[in-house]
Length: 319
Ligand SMILES: Nc1ncnc2c1ncn2[C@@H]1O[C@H](COP(=O)(O)OP(=O)(O)OP(=O)(O)O)[C@@H](O)[C@H]1O
Image (cartoon, rainbow, N blue to C red; front, side, top):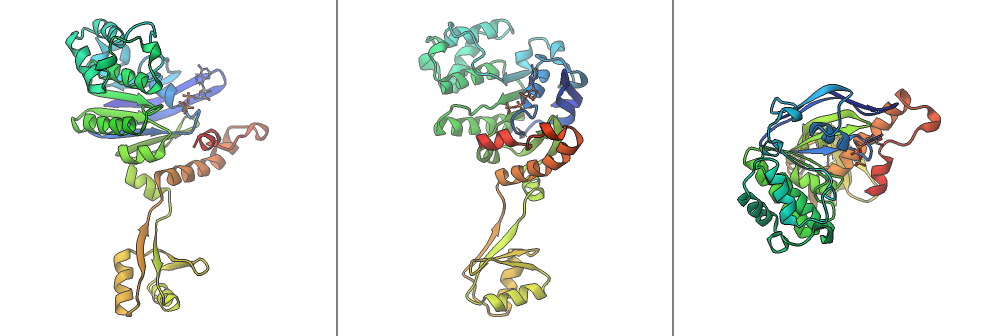
């Protein structure tokens, strides 16, 4: 379990992390989302004792990072895959980490095998591709067999097979009862991996909710219908209290009615349907919706008009 309470970090005038309070629970994958500059990496660095909070507190299984003896046995992290001694071989890099944390040498072989780097274990890390570097960083995170794992952008640079592998790894770590906290800008990937989401913007907490609730709360869901009897169906549905949006001669979009109910009404009135499909926004759409709303909220409260930037701008450029 990771617990943040009022966690705040200022760099001069800049408030990078603003009074964050949330918990990351074991047994599930928790996604950590926010546009560029939202404060995700700063939060993760404070968790690992790499940055000192200006105010507030963050605890790992009830302790501060610097109170942990052999911290790799409690929490494993991938923050910046390039942050390693490139002149060392993959094996020696992991061996150094293991020795400084009281972890047996045999474990180095195990994690190299887990991440698929056994064949290149004696090669220098500076010759590694981005994807191999990510795998080596993940091996380092797994080294101490920790109960808590934290990954900052783990799929960066990975090919589809590597992305698939990471997804399954995170799910299996969570299924073993571990706490898995992962940030990513790849919304489609996050939607497939995370059970729960923590979303921040401009350092503030915007959402702390299940994936399903996040999408439901931040997007419109409706039922799409195609029928050769449009007028009759519209009449029936409106009399049942539903809102029907008609776009030219395209499909009907119905708000406020479940597909089962719509299907039953159509059958009762002997109306033929060619399509009856519930539509749910994607995580990406829900995220854009939430960030769009936050532009107005933050713009007036914090930044002078001449310095205002559309909130989430950087994320949109990348996305
Ligand atoms: N050492 C620092 N000195 C000054 N400002 C910093 C420092 N580190 C981060 N910041 C600022 O704090 C804010 C949060 O940055 P952070 O890197 O935590 O965001 P992020 O959500 O991880 O972004 P990204 O998605 O781009 O990685 C940014 O405005 C950044 O410019």
